[in-house]
Image 1 (cartoon, one colour):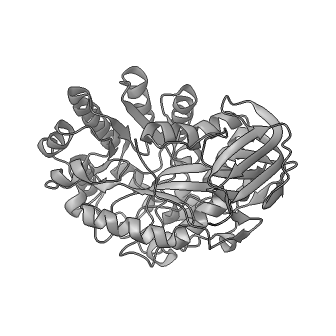
Image 2 (cartoon, one colour; image 1 turned 90 degrees about the horizontal axis):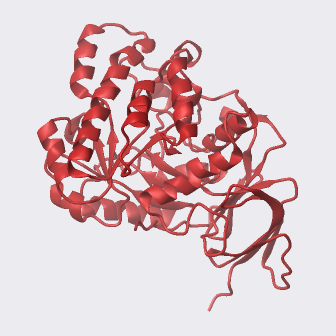
Image 3 (tube, one colour; image 1 turned 180 degrees about the horizontal axis):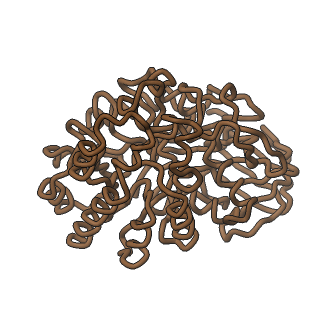
Length: 439
């Protein structure tokens, strides 16, 4: 038998489950936290970390990423993406089905799980994607956090935009449905109106606030009709947030990305097509309304929608440029910087990026620093500011829309299952995460 993996973190500023801060020690054995106390006497310790001056948080669970494997590995793959996760303090992720082949069958899901077990430095889960005719797979595929439906801004088999087809999915089974809520008919109409315009800023007018609102209204209507567990991915508009503020059933959750909180359509002038994503960046007013909805609990948590493309692909002329941007390396530092600017609290960031995600997706033993919880942890430095530098990024695409932003709260040490996977700039590529379970 192998000896137990024991780790002792000493004198960290620990964010406790109730949101309070305590200077103390955390002891982990094998993959779990076994003790949290002001001081722990431990005679047999395999590894000890002096965390004085650092803040200890539960590892981030990023519930919406596109890691491009299989089929699109020139943009990213599970190994490079999980290295980027480790550097960003992300210890678990939920990945989307728009790979090649699409993740629409048990066989494709099993293939991704097998790849991840061999390559991923952090914990992983994979959505099953809805098509117009794969209902048996949607009902039976295991393990998966839920069903992903692209209601718009997708083409091919994964576009499910007809109300009849959507209703057939909402009507059967009880599994969580996560929607990319944009109305494809509205987008198609707007594309014709703005045809032959090559300024990328028009992207936010083509896939406008109304396109998002129409789809979210339809998803809510179907969810209420069948009392079906619904999650609204990357909410981007003030109108959607206000809709949920006034009519949000207990079985509905929503998320927002850091980019929809911190960037708006003015970014097109600064970074051009690097600011292009789906749903698009909106107005400063939308930023404000989304922030307030997040603080008020109308929006439940944060996701990055990490969706890398190469700089060569992004250098094409709009509308030939792909939508999407990377995010797993910067999300925690962005949100902790916002906390330092008093836009929110550190406890809120922990809730939005760890605890609330674990609760929403039924991921056991994650999202809190307490005995019995998994030892997925991140030590961050809230005393030092450092800019986002392209050359330091580990994502394969090697760029960020936040390049040059001066941020604090960067991960110093990231721990997955009680093992140090990232420490002071170095990734331990020998660590492997585990498949997440969903209750």
